[in-house]
Length: 123
Image 1 (cartoon, rainbow, N blue to C red):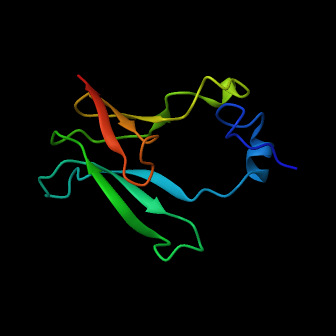
Image 2: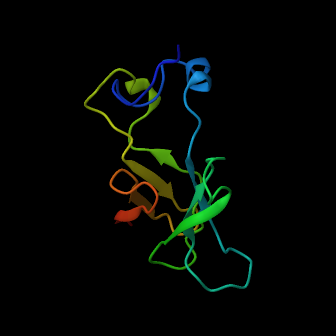
C-alpha cells in the first residue's frame, strides 16, 4: 500500500513511494511571454490533468503576475519532501522566481488549489 501524504506531512519518504501514490489532478505551469512580441505579464496556468474530469487537459485558471518582463522560471514548494512525516508542514505555497527581474512571487495554492492567488511579491 502506498504512503499518502495528506495526514503525515508533505511529500513521500522516497520517489518510489511517490510513484505509488495517487495521480495528480492539477498541475501548475509558469507561462512566459519573453521574445513573443506580446506585452503582457507572465502567468501561472493551472491545468486539469484528471482523466475523469470534463476539463481534462485544459487550462482552468490563469494567475497573471503584476509586472511585465519577469520571465517566470522553475517553481518550488514552501516545504520540501524532506519534511515527510511532519504534520505541522503543508505545501500551501508555490514559489516562482523570475530570471529577468529577480522578483520572487509566492502563490497561495492551499486555499483554492484550482484558482490560486498571489500571496506575496518580493523585489
